[in-house]
Length: 437
Image 1 (cartoon, rainbow, N blue to C red):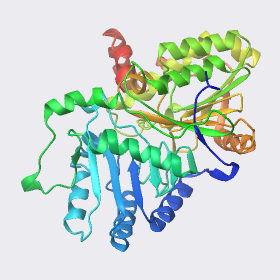
Image 2 (image 1 turned 180 degrees about the horizontal axis):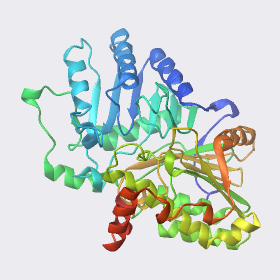
Image 3 (image 1 turned 180 degrees about the vertical axis):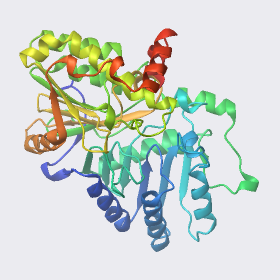
Image 4 (image 1 turned 90 degrees about the vertical axis):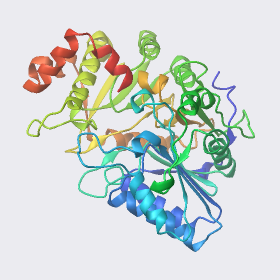
């Protein structure tokens, strides 16, 4: 099926790899300053912090220097209108957008996309920084930690693809299915005249977004890239592609995920892959590298139990597949680098197919969030060494798991964590939580 999947033809020099968040920030600022026609940015959020304001200022400067430049930023509506989890007094990023636009001679468009009526039911997880004929693709959002503004960073993947057809296709999908939709609203409206989206329009947005697709001049020959978008369980081409990558792999898989919580259909496909004698390398974040990890010396809150829930899911999988770990077929690599966090996603199959995506391999991403990804077909092997270099870089701060018992159990956790996890188990809520968080 993968061989029959059409894509956009790419030349060997069309892709560049950025290996660090600092390199992503530098590339973004350079590309924005040089933009001549259009900038379209899709991210979960553009934060009101030093790095977020620097990106927003660069966008405003680009618009001021070239008023004809089309600048559109898409972020999740609900995420933009609330403060950070666990932080009081933060009223939401939209206040920054509004303030900046009130003072701007040449305002830009910043839109909030309410994928569902509530944030926990689904968010805009679409990724891509499309600047003229270039697509910078990363799972990163725009704030201090993703762009390594201070002493901590959140590790992700970063690829630059020069392709007029890919940029046109991705920008056109955003315009046709998101920007023009009646449920999508400006986040820069003056307070006195602000109009929020109609609740009925928001409730029906899911059905309209689930029909979204990228249209492009396709080829089934040679090196190419296939953009895919998906929302919901039914007819989700991105989810189907991931299953096909696993099912059709002949030798090996290299998988990156921040935490291990695969949907049942994917877990079953991975088990089948191992039983057929093939290899899997999984690079997963240590619980301390999770976005929501709270060090024991800091005040604990309920959301801090999430990394421990994911760790127990990984332990359960490793215990079930210990035979494959012993044989060397299954290699689980735990990523940990100081107080930094891990946010990588993607799958490589047989060193030939490479999915770069912001989609988590979990039930929430597969059922609730609007996700996208780019499948790179390296039919001629011209990018094999580059992906190998990227994988070596990813593995630099990892330790291989040799036995499931290396993963802590409930009795090893801090008392507040044990208390809440026992409560979750008692009411059997862990299954539900892993589907929505």
